[in-house]
Length: 407
Image (cartoon, rainbow, N blue to C red; front, side):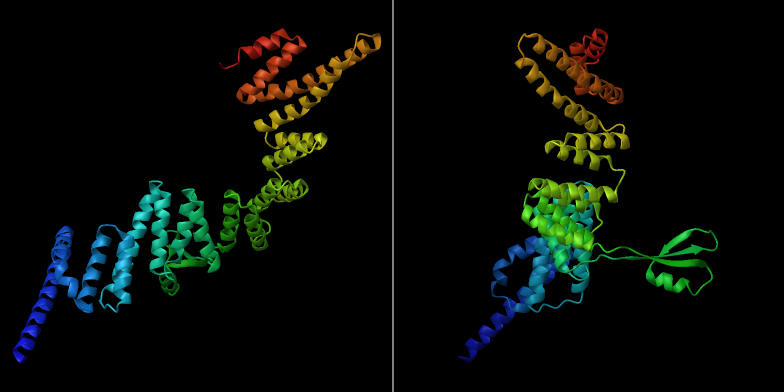
């Protein structure tokens, strides 16, 4: 019996020694740069590790993590490192390895962003954040931005919501001083800033602290909900965002657009006027007010807003076109009445009056359209002018516009 126990013990020690030997060989191959050799060694010894103890198994898992990181399979690498740590694995280089993994991930994400692979960059940056959620929290913010750039709004919403839940501020402080020798302003790290204040090499030391990113985060959540068509959640989010930053023009416009979708035109107009208070020279704001008032049948107000938009931006083509369209809306009623008249003397007299009114509408549109043609040879304006000149009997004007038509 004793001989059998000794034999079992010797066999166990032999297997354990073999496992350690194979791990060391695989690790040596990896450290020498032969990544595939390390992979092959682990695969060929797979059966040997089936009965490995926790310590040897952890060494294997850790090496597999390093191999995955080398192959840029970052999710697998992080999974292996996490398993290693949770199983009580110990390695003097573990913290440095995690930092190295973070750096590798971020460098690839930078390349992805540069090549406009935004969604891939976002996922990598989020992974970098998950490695150390306290130290790497900035990467969660960058992940959200990359997701938006890649039009992955669901992903961006996930990232921004987490930023909101942890109330991420993203406030940074930069340190500057002026060189006595060159007179140039130089940026320093905090430690350098503190050190050089004790010397006479620099003067005019100052610090610049950035604004909190939290209002922007809450705003973006509202914008994304609006983009996804979830008006109820968008409205809730935009109200919360406006509570954080009530003067933000984009937020005002987002809320206004939501009210348009909900057919609450009065509230839309109130918000557009509020937006104009924030940006009184923005032609688009006046144009939008013109559109809404035109839709509501308030033609005089709409006309005034279109004219204001053109005044602020003389090259605003949509302003000219909508103004002409608004003026010509009156033509349909005139034509309808003309067609309803008979042949009596009174009807003929009325017809002549209506004809003059119709021509006056056309004449009112002519200078507006001519200005638009002058700006950009706008084809819609050219064709409308050609029709008006034809109706008015202005053959010269008709031929002039006809020559400008692009077939």
